[in-house]
Amino acid sequence: MELTDEQKKILDHNPNKHACILAGPGTGKSSTIIYYISGMQKKYPDKKVRLLTFTRAANRELMDKINEADNNLVATSTIHSFAISILLKNPGTSDFPELLRIAGEWEWNELIKKDFAYRLNTETKDIEKLKNEMSASWQSLSQQNNPDISLELRARFMGLWGEHRKIFGYTLLSELLFRLKIALEGNPDLDIGNLDLIAIDEYQDLNECDLKCISLLSERGITIFAIGDKDQSIYQFREANPLGIINFSSEYKAETYPLSISHRCGKKVLEWANFVIAGDTGRDENTFVRASDENPEGVVRYLVFNKQDNEAKGIVELVKWLTTKQQVPYEEILILTRTIKVAEPIKDALKATSIPIADPEEYKDILNNENTRYLISILHLLVNKYDSLAWWTILHLTKGIGPQNISRIYDLAKQRRKQFGEVLVNEAGINFTNFLEINSKTKEKVHSVLSSISEIEIPEFTQWGKWIDEQIKNCNLPKPADGFDKLLEKIDSMKEDNSLNLSQYVNQFEPAVNDIINSKVAGQLRVMTLTRSKGLTARATIIAGVEKGIIPHPKANDDQEERRLLYVGMTRAKEFLFLTRCRIRTGQTAHSGIENVRGKRDICPFLTGGSVNQEDGEVYLKNLFL
Image 1 (cartoon, rainbow, N blue to C red):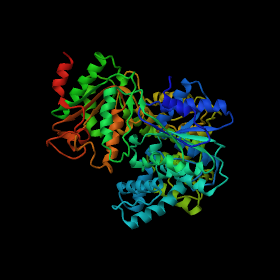
Image 2: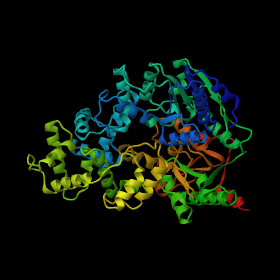
Image 3: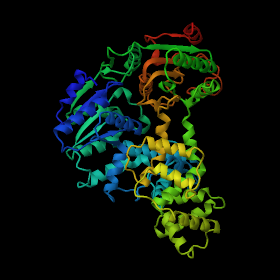
Image 4: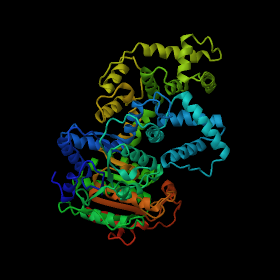
């Protein structure tokens, strides 16, 4: 990689001083920081460095670049993984059940949320609101009360929350950084691994709690590198705030290094995207990323179709033109929408013409299948036979064991101040002689599961996906949904760490599926929401439904973040960028954003006055194939 003058300045930075790297899309920030750390470690071999990312997808991308650079000294992880590693290294320093057991999406939706609704005599939608409210308070470090929730219900929820999570022994992913903050504040001797420098990518995506943790780490003498782009701050739903990176230089007295040359986007692509982001009223300066001289000119169009079916057919034709006339492989095409509803007719049209698309729901369906959930629970019990969420799942999925039996075990655990799983296993050891109220089906199931897991010997370390598949084929483990073996292969191919134990491997399932949804698959194009596109690149990007009433979305809290979201989507494109909209929408897509069935649709306000004019999509496509 030939470094620019801007990048070379970063390589000369003093590693004992804080730094802020302001890097727009495609400016080579990842490669630059890897070069910097590699050079620093050669010069100062005793310095310990950790490179943190916000998402697993970004972490995997960094790992690939590190492997290309042939440098195995650069340690990377997600911020959540970093928090977990410190909390596990320092047991008892924060208030969460031990052993650390993070409740997954399925466990929250199918078990915890429904049980809360039952015990509080309310609806699951209220429990979801209360959980989101609680998570927002952790993330923003301030109480954020939902006006739709009564004070009484909130008080009852918080009381049950403390009891419930202790009995079932779980933690939510959204609270991990809050628990790390508490541990750092209350324990000056906390073991954080003798780190000298932490570089945090996508710094603009950190919330108040994340930022506080970074500040507390810096107070222990750790140098902080903040890397990011305020124009790509799009995670307000988790209380992220671009002020974190905007104010970093002044708060930390840090050197600021702008990277302003994009090596990714076509010149016309970047020109159009810059017009969109220039309208962000929160920007306090007029600096924009510019394309390098080597970047392609790029093709940009804003196409208007009569209805959503015409839009879908037009996108199919664009895909055909890209693949046949421009030799763009399917995996280098991204189709993005603001909402899932807008994407549905497009996916139907692609499937009807046998264009291969990566179905993001395929692996979620496999993971959420009841047979798969049963298997995953058995795997959890192989690691910890007292795992309460695993036992709850198994009993929940077993016919003949109703919620009353589960409630009886819960009440006994509450009475004994023990966890659900511990009570269940201990009672099984004395054949439930002290617990006659439990039904025979429950007794049989507990004895059967304990007997089966006792016969499986867990190796100290192995290729876990292959080992699990072999155990299933040998009938030592229950059979999951069809396709689970393929899911294991994918997880094995994208593991962050080759030294995971079985517990860590099993905990990768849900996060890995979310990564797979975004992953590039040879021979398949990807259809996803704009929010999911962060960090991805493709030769061609098509953004559908770019019209007033959908973008900005009426339920969004901040129109400027909606503008940044469109900017993020546009800057995924290396060479071809097509935006589409409809004059009229009917059916389900008419209910996306502001409901407007058969009403006139208009240009997205973020594009008004821009350098790219609207044009009739069908006329454009006819000329395209001439």
